[in-house]
Image 1 (cartoon, rainbow, N blue to C red):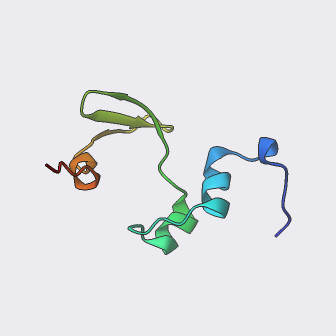
Image 2: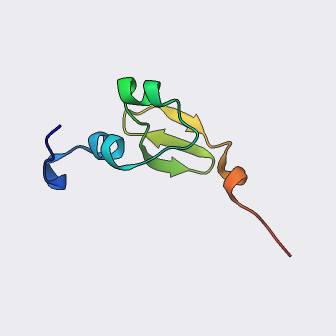
Length: 66
């Protein structure tokens, strides 16, 4: 694998080369590429391919203490 300057790589390629996704099926991730969120409106998020999702996992990473 040759390393190219970051400005020549797509977001998807930089993601594949640089990030560890702990809750991701890596085989699927390598074959189909990552899901990159482009925008959001309320609980709806939209990826770079225009597919819309309901953000039902946000609360998993938020912890209220006190």
